[in-house]
Length: 147
Image 1 (cartoon, rainbow, N blue to C red):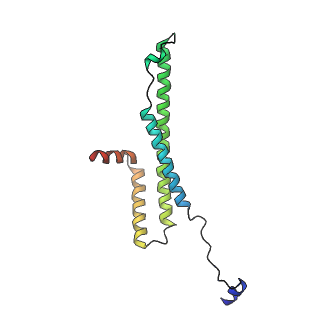
Image 2 (image 1 turned 135 degrees about the vertical axis):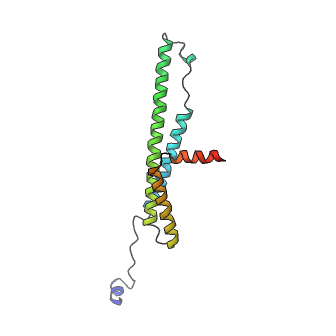
Image 3 (image 1 turned 120 degrees about the vertical axis):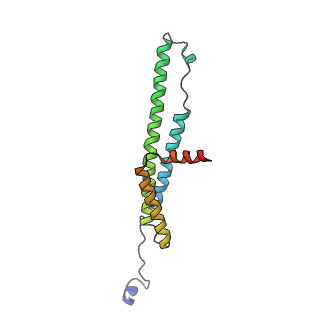
């Protein structure tokens, strides 16, 4: 051991730190950002107002112009709802994967009972995510209705 210290200039070798230490935190933060973006798209689909029929008085064929504008509005609302569904699903899967990675790799500094509780919670969340028909947002809305 003294020979190694002399070769290194008198200092003992230090273990290398993992470069992936913050990976789970980055995945969790990204997942939360994607979930927030999905909530914004859900809000946009809920509060997008259809066109009013009076806005098409200058067109020669008012009924057809209104119907075209109404179809465009419905397509826009369906696109917002699709983006909401896609982003919320991706965000939830990323959140579970980030929590799972944090529990498995980044929690060595925590006591064993905390790691076991974290793993149990992540596993419950993972099983619930892929086996239930209700989304996480539907569950939160139902719980709010109980109050």
